[in-house]
Image (cartoon, rainbow, N blue to C red; front, side, top):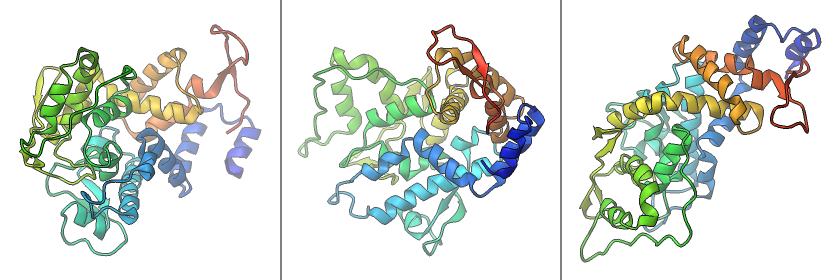
Amino acid sequence: PDDQLLDLAAHNRLSDPAVVAGQVRRMLADRRATRFMNDFVGQWLQMRNIHAQDPDGNLFAGFNDTLRKAMVSETELFFESQVREDRPIPELLRADYTYLNEQLARHYDVDDVYGSHFRRVTWTDDRRHGLLGHASLLTVTSYANRTSVVLRGKWVLEALLGAPPPPPPANVPPLEEADASSPTSLRERMEAHRRSPVCASCHRRMDPLGFALEHFDAIGRWRETDGRAAIDATISLSGETIDSPRAFREALLREGHGAFIRTVTEKLLTYALGRGVAYYDAPAIRQIVRDVARDDYRWSSLLQHIVASDPFRLQRTPGAGETAPLTAVAQQP
């Protein structure tokens, strides 16, 4: 908080919705808001885990720390542009642009980008539109030597749809490695893996979401084959055949009656509160989503309605039970 915000709190002005909305807009325009945006996107999308990733150098010789940092910068710059330009939240999955430097452009087979500084680039095809084409997220949801439909499917469920699967049971058999004498695709090996009754129920939810991203390798490059086996990334989702990255993105936005918007709201509220959301926050979350819908799902509206919500403005009495009343938080920013 800066002096202006502290002064408003001291004079009891932060209970005025118009004042709060004005302060949200002012703070978002401040360059210091970049730290919040980077921190939130790293937490929400689990992008921080990329620093623990160590892709196999024999398989991915082009991967190094400089490329890793470029991947992170792309996603941070993209997310910041979405918020600062006050774009509709669904544009996170639809936007036709990104930020590249020369090294990352080469990684994506994009021509005419030179130098180490990042610049905004418009995609010439729609395969990489939005976050799902970012190498940072495709790398963090892969193993060192291959992609993982399970990690990617689990990430989509958790980060984008707000429906995390249960923990895996004990003694799950490992996935069979490909046989060089008889090449099989990852899809074929996963289908064999799913024949185990112990594995089937959860994999039925996760695997299609991961398979939809199989054209991206373990460091986010586009590919047509997995080894010598052709990739089949066609899936069925909610009874609909999905056969392209664009169709997958649009299906996710339709899934679960607005699950993506609701999940972004929950993740940002979690970040704002510094705690996980609970069952008693559900009415406020539903109201925030309804209010933001009237504003075309703009980021400014989401942030304003979060800071005006009861979970943000009020707190439960410490030490009280589940029925403890909400009490007003002192006028502090």
